View 1 (cartoon, rainbow over the protein chains, first blue to last red):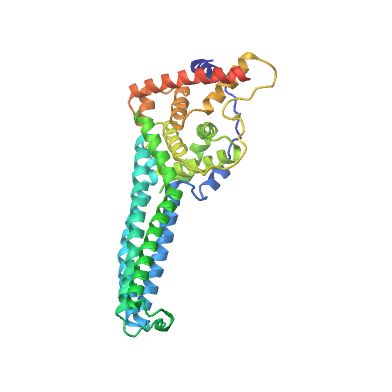
View 2: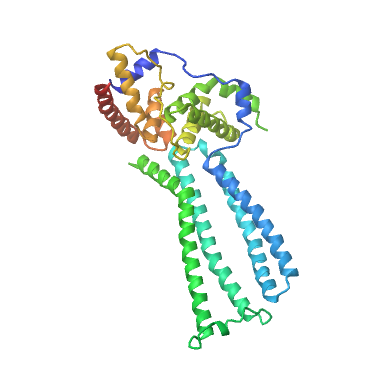
Amino acid sequence: MELDELKILLNGQQTQTHVVKSAEEITFMLTTKTRSITGKLRRSLRIEIICCYAAVILCGAAAIFATYRSLRIYFAVFFIFSLLFLPYLYSLLKKINQFKSSNTLPVKENLQSLFNLLKTFVKRYFQITIFLVPACLVLALLLGYNDNSLQGPDLEGLLSPHINLDTLKSVMVIAYLAIFSVAMYYFTRWYLKKLYGNYLDQLQLLIKELDE
Amino acid sequence: MVDSKEFIALLKRHQNIVHKVCSLYMDNIADREDLFQEITLQAWNAFRSFRGEAKFSTWLYRVALNTAISFYRKEKRMPVFTNTEVFPEYCEEHNPAEEQMQAMYKAIESLSKIDKALLILYLEDYSYDEIGNMLGITANNVAVKINRVKTRLKEESKKHYQFS
């Protein structure tokens, strides 16, 4: 059978095989939660905005009330970071909200907009995470190192006299920084790929198919 | 303020379009219900931009196809049901014409999301220009793709018909 034969056959039969939805059912559907990827992004951004407000409050409070000077500086820096991050999150949310009516665009244009939006979101998310991890660690180490009021455990007696304690500390700190940063890099990449990567690949394939 | 009553009345009248798209893109009832709900929501969100320049049915096709094509669900380990809702179901009696038709439906299931969109619009008698406008490609590109779909369906349905 060929497609045109099927077309003629289908046009000849006006059989209704589905269950007709009532006005009440349609009304109910309008109140339900969306399952679209932009809906997912919107929810995720709203949670991040709430977390960011919580970080502003907690870091602000810690910057004022922390006992150690180094901790006050540390939290003050992240209080400023969180404050600066808020308008950025709002701008992303605005972009996603503007996307709401893009379903009326031609399919190719809609797919391209969705792909660009998602790619920007994933890229920024990755950049921020990758920047924040070493920034937190380096800042914490610098401040801790310079804070004379902080005292760590006395290790002198536990080590062999041939090992220099300062060298050992430096090696451990560098190794910790390197391992943690590399692990975070791969974890973030894996996590974003798991969340949005496969979908991005699928969108790219669809756009390519339309171009062919 | 957008009138929800007007939207509901229009959607109720044209729900056949949404059902067709859901049946074409989803192979089980639960997924079809999910997609129906999502298309309804997306259409409602976009309804404020509907100016009545195009027919509501054409506008709804565009929203429904955009939603169905970009609808993402994680692969679930569920049994695949044969799609009998998108096209009429036939009895088990041996009838070559009906078997050929069933083979054609199976072949349609194997098409890509874009090809399914082309197919449904072609079956609805939209012109190549209109299909091109909806998909964002040229009428020439539509013609080429439709020809490819026809050839593919012919070959695929032959395979299914041989096995049945």
